[in-house]
Length: 486
View (cartoon, helix red, strand yellow):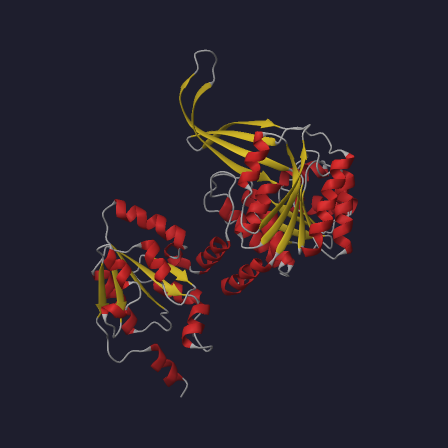
């Protein structure tokens, strides 16, 4: 399995990627409400309408996932000349996303409306047409493809069967990408996978694979057997099969499959999970990452997105944090992203708890570190420790540091009883974290004056306290390293 410190570098590489997404655009509308009685008119629940949320769905959600991972994307598809199409366009106004739509006044923008009460979907209502795109509109779409393809490191074909990805369009896009050596990843629809002949990767879920194979797919052995048969018949090189609670399988036509167990701790909503898989897998391929590692990354992303409500996306920071958590054993619950830490801290504040904050590299944890952390915890109810990332330590301490990577250092800190949360940061100082957390107490260990402590002025400006932990003589990581060097 890919180690977290290596995965961190590979996720960072996604920021340099450009992926072209082509396919069916749709607007996902989520209507939240409540149900507390049965209708007197019929044995059906009465849904009391509450808040409405609009999100890009289909190919739009693939593109949104790509930019959330830190990369860039070009999105090509079709919308109607209607209010829903304009709402979708507004939802796709994202940094690092270029949208090239073809407008068909004769068809409505595809809309999926989900009615949700008490965390459960009660009904989905679809407004759509499945009519094939006309010749002139298909040509306009392909012209957009020709303009965007030279910059792409990978292509995603997001097929929801709404008429945009006709057999002719599919074959032309696949051929154009192959001519430029660009891998194509297909999120398929229907039973005829010959439509995707020549594609490098096709990513069905287990039900879609069963439909394509014309037989039930009950377990991993069935997945492998049916996938190989469908690939051979359809001219597809590799399948990436998602299997819900059974995880994910990467199956090349050679039959040398790799399987990845499911990572979700609690499944909340599977809406758009397939979009997250193909987006993260394609982005990794565009970054030059090998297919098994790309599949492992996609599996991690899938495990994160299904814990979220609605058509959600996964960020690069969430993947890195998740990989750290998997490697940090008993202390994993304490290692959090900044967003997660802020949510937890908000809950602490609601309970009237005082929040403390300290920071450092904590390389080769020694008694001086332990004393500083213990003193910090004495002045608060909950203690957040901001930990310099490996890159940050190298900039501050030199190329030979840190001795231990950020995973190891975070694990050791998380194992300390006095520490409640550990948050990694990549900057040279934790000032942005201090401004975001707004701790009640800021503590720094060492030989400092209060006015020398980063963030002291910020904390004091809203009435917080700044304390210098008593320096424990005779302990220093730098001196320890020097002694080790002889």
